Length: 437
Image (cartoon, rainbow, N blue to C red; front, side, top):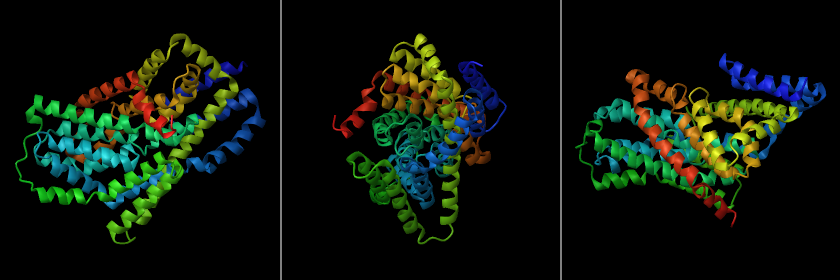
């Protein structure tokens, strides 16, 4: 049988497997192995099975992934997230819509030490949502704001999404993390402006808060978040300056978060074991999906389908701008139905060779892809942040409220996406400075 036909057949089989609910790691790994057996025989297939999983988990550069996961889990366990929101609340609550603004600022800061969109969304649902309901804020816009700002963790480093993209495309983890700083700040600013405009247009969405707040209270609250500021500056400053590689930065960040947790918790009892178990569980799930995706990717290369797909895609999208628009449309549609990690791992083996063929900067493409991932986590009906906040909110809200609440923020995300596509320098300038170019 023609190997290219085998490749297209396995692609169709993957779509069907995902449609019937087979776990993505199982579907990709099984189909990848089956395709290699048909196209290249058992010798190559079993050779890949012996070497590829070990190569993934044994690669020192990939140590950044579990370390960033551990850093985020420890940061949540320390309770510093609540202090960040409390400080932002005291400084911003007298503004119309100040609690929305506090969620935006708090989520942006916590994103710089969490790396996970789901963790961000769940934590702020527990901390901020009761306060917003208490002061009469719109139930739908409040939960929509929390779900949407949780997506900041995909862009603002350290980002697990960026690490996965780097692993899949053999790019520099450090350059990708640094590249997310400016787009992340732009996203937060657009959110702040957008929320201000929404509550000015409909004041009933955010009743004014009249409780007095003194300046000593504000400064005292601001003084309590210094561990977060130091941790962010240490990790990102170390990567940018070259003091340590990204894998080392992840370890340093996890150690810093551990020290903060020990200091805040006054010891080890009650939190250390479940925290380590959570981090290990999340990391193992990610690595299993990565191994399955890489087996599928290796099979696509073996059967020669990649060259054929590159030719087909470049026929329709023969310029970088056309391709970026095509890829954006593809991910926006897929994001309605497939979770983010699976979407990246399934599509990158097909699309990244086109990026290379068209001469598109892989860092710029990575940042645009991450922005599309941000949008997909809040896109109904399968956006993972939507279900994360629904679960954390319990009976306080419903899916209809949530969809209504995230809709304006999806519009804001589309504005940021357009800016990043039109101005690639926003994504590439800092990495070039990092390299001294």
